[in-house]
Amino acid sequence: MTLDLHARPNVLPWPPVIFGIAWIVGFVLEQFAPSGDALPHWALTIGRVIAAAGILLDLWAMGAMTSAGTNIMPNHGASHLVTSGPFAFTRNPIYLGNTLFTLGIGLGLGALWFVPLGFAAAWSVERLAIRREEAHLSARFGAEWSSYAAKTPRWLW
Image (tube, rainbow, N blue to C red; front, side):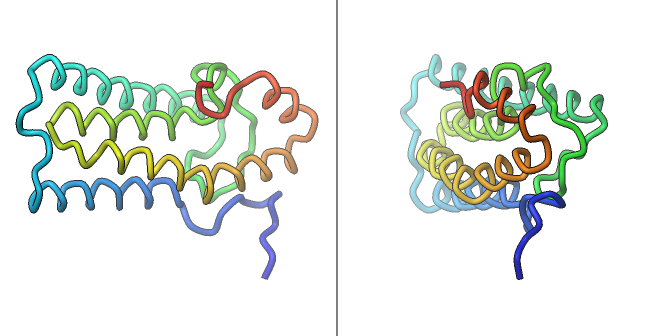
C-alpha cells in the first residue's frame, strides 16, 4: 500500500505519540531513578521559563494554523501553507514547542531524564514525521513550498 502524499503525510499522528511516550518514560524513570534533586533554584526557574515558552509557541502556532483554515493534526493533509506567525521563523513551531516544553520540564521539575528524552523525541519526530510532512507539502504546494523551505529553517538553525 502506498501513501498518497497529496492526501496526507502520515497514517499515525507520530509527533504527539512520540512526545507522549517520552513524557511517560521520563516520569517512570524519575520514579525509579530520580535525577535532578540537587539542581539550584536558578536552573529550576530557567527550566520553567523554557517550558512556558514551549507552551506559548505551541499555542501561537496552533492559532496561526486555525486562522489560516488548515488542520493541526500531523496525520491529515494541509489545505493551506502557513508561513506567517511562528512559521516565519521555523517550519515546525509545534514540534519545537513540544521539544522546548520537554526540555523545560526536565530542568523545571528537576527531572533530568526529560532532557535526553526531549532530544530523542525531536530526532524521532524528524525521522518519522517531519520528512514525510515536508514531502507532502512539496507535493501539494510545489514552488510555494520550495521558496518557503529555502528561506525558513526546519527548526531554528
